[in-house]
Image 1 (cartoon, helix red, strand yellow):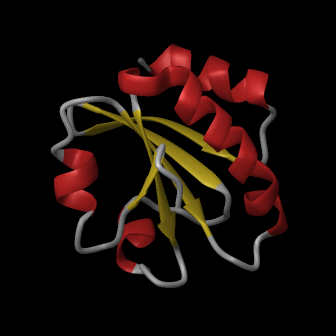
Image 2 (cartoon, rainbow, N blue to C red):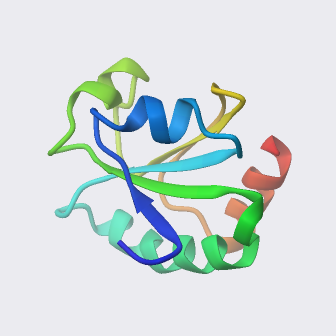
Amino acid sequence: MSATIISVTDATFESQVVKAEKPVLVDFWADWCGPCKMLAPILEGLATEYGEKIIVAKLNVDENPQTPGTFGIMGIPTLLMFKNGQNVGKSVGYKSAAELKSFIDSNL
């Protein structure tokens, strides 16, 4: 991960995402996923751009199978937006930076 994106696991999801004081954008991804790799630099840029407004997190679905099942993640990449502990938005598949900004802004 980077300095602007945190890594979460099944064990830390509750404390780092659900109980976070800021909105959290969670990227459900895997090493073998081509679209996930294409999305990574876009998320880096957005994490920097949004700075202190949101937390950007990544959860590897192969290493953490419990959380994706809890939220009905069927394909990756899937992005979920959490606000005040609630899942308020879902985006499935690769999206451009402009599309992701619109998704984030509509869920802030």
